[in-house]
Image 1 (cartoon, rainbow, N blue to C red):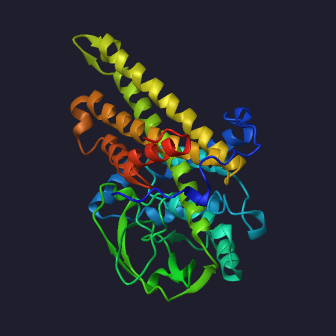
Image 2 (image 1 turned 90 degrees about the vertical axis):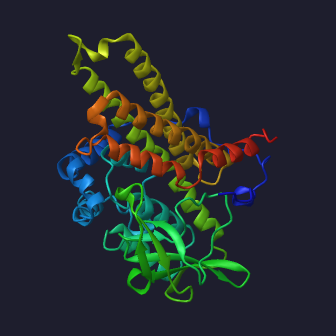
Image 3 (image 1 turned 60 degrees about the vertical axis):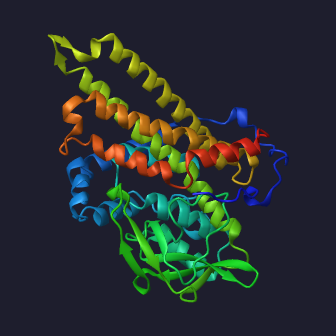
Length: 384
């Protein structure tokens, strides 16, 4: 899919980076970060078994609602990025990145990325009174929202407006009760909140059924305005946050694939020896380990840069870098996991295929790697 490469957020490429000391950003987990990671990991370990995730491909979506309600209300993650003045936790992308890593490790079928990250960030950018009320509802976990744009939409593209045509391949709408609909308003753009019950949602068979897509038909004049004026910046802010934090999810996928593969090769025996002791496999695992560690560093830096100054050029540079690198590492790690698990890795009963499908689906979400590399080249002056 080719889109015009307009300047992101209407800023020139040579605009100076903000005064944030990016070489001093903290990338290591604090004690609070470790507590958050442990809480999310423990919750998912108890309530998100791989067998139930696999059942989604047979049409059994019974686990989705209770799992999301537990994360949203019991752990309070629905309002993690909602500012405190709107009754949210007021956390930053650094904390959200930890949550997305753990969700990626479990291939959790919850709308955290689409509702608590993309929709909440866009809504918090310039809300009307109705928007502020909706933010408080999102923060409390009483409502779930989804931005009605196709899943491959990148934050630097022109905002796709909803009109009379069907909006295809939208993520998060099947779990949402409120749709955020970008529509034309005079010479600008506004976002309207429309009840999901007022739209026509047609589920589609997705590669990754743990993040099922749907085609959406909705009246652009329906609902209530929740972001007024020119909402372009708000929508792009939501998609930028989604891009950065999707990279953290991809890191979680890659880390789990690496860990499960190493564990398997330490137990599997062939020709009277532990398979993991063969030199050729050691080299492949070493290469994969360095790739995954690099992706982790890139994703953490992107999250820290976004948390430090979401409006800075550096945050965009970091976002494009993370999106281009982490998506390909996640696919590599999943492919290696399938191959190095041997015959069992090709079976439906083994969970490896769930990670491969999530990694491949994430690779096209919010912009292909090639798009992000092209934008990155423009931002750093490497255009051809």
